[in-house]
Image 1: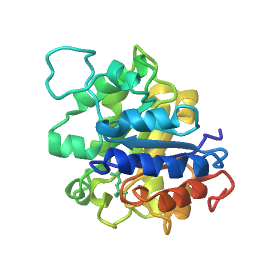
Image 2 (image 1 turned 120 degrees about the vertical axis):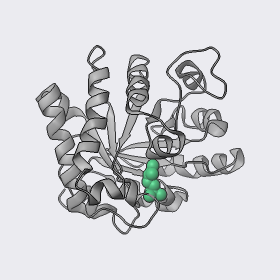
Image 3 (image 1 turned 90 degrees about the horizontal axis):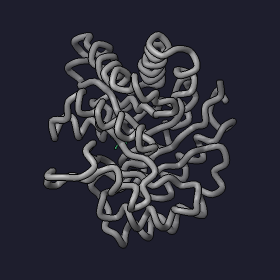
Image 4 (image 1 turned 60 degrees about the vertical axis):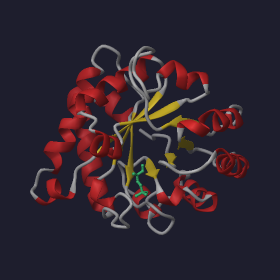
Length: 259
Ligand SMILES: O=C[C@H](O)COP(=O)(O)O
């Protein structure tokens, strides 16, 4: 099944509102030409409303980088799904490794957030991946399969067709140390196989799985050329519009190495 590619920018903790406005104004006309690719931009809460408003009538998907699964209440510092929708977010990152490693998010919290996003029709991009130590000790698959399975378990009641996963080996994030295209295909192919075993052929074929970790214009074509890789979640190389647009263009169907 041909899945629609996705190219996603994760600005992380970068950009003021003015910088976000300038970036979005430059991106929108150029992303409009990106036929066949879903373009998403995951931005800090402080500029989400502005990016959401500017992108509202465009194909560009404005997204948040985090949220909490309760809708309201005494959760100081947190932001809920209704609040994200109110500022025009259409997607959200869930369980990015920086949330898991720095802020202690557990597999259970990530799974509950994913369920809440699905229920609210906010597209979750669920991040999974192993540390260098886990990879070196042969524990990559135990870690990644555990993260994916916990999410699937939580989604039992709500389905979750169309959710997006992002495989991001932690050792490749922001290090310039990209996984080889074979490593990316191996991990992502195994994730898809797990989805097939747990939820059947149609679900597995429909879920997009992105790769993340030091993706840049110089390596994107090779990564996108892998059979099971449906796009990329990009940090550093998404911060400049020119470089992000190069990545979007490389994701267009027919532009990747194997088609
Ligand atoms: O969300 C994006 C990933 O953490 C990758 O970041 P990076 O492209 O700067 O390595």
